[in-house]
Length: 186
Image (spheres, rainbow, N blue to C red):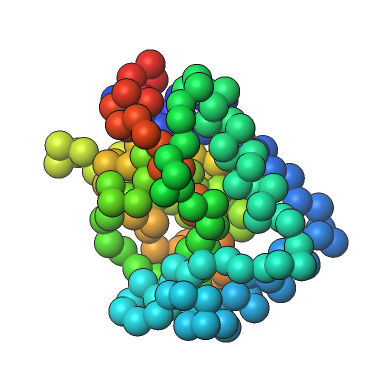
């Protein structure tokens, strides 16, 4: 674990979840199948519906294990917080390629306390931007890296650097505590 910005309270975990080549083919298939079925899976409409969608796969436990690892790491980092009864263990995929992407700052204040972004597949040079007090912080994650940050931190994925798919898996934890209580030690 590494704190990449104490001011913004961003934690990085490199090599968070390794996926070997053969299993990656299976996970790629699941991600693309969910992309094609995104309107059936509960998210439609608007520009975000083209790029951000819920992952549903009852036949493989990859995303369940990924979320469980996110929750376990978060408890190890922040101590024993209490998970809200409103918490959902859903993983969402942000999918971009070439000119198909969205550049919009957003936060997760309404849906979470702790946010996680796992960089399942990205291109060298891809980045995410964070915004606080009119200051932008650009970070270049590595493949299989997890970033954990508070729900009120504005962020956006930046334009992909190549004409290859970029997949980031977004996860949230809703706690009974407030984010400033959870992240106070960072």
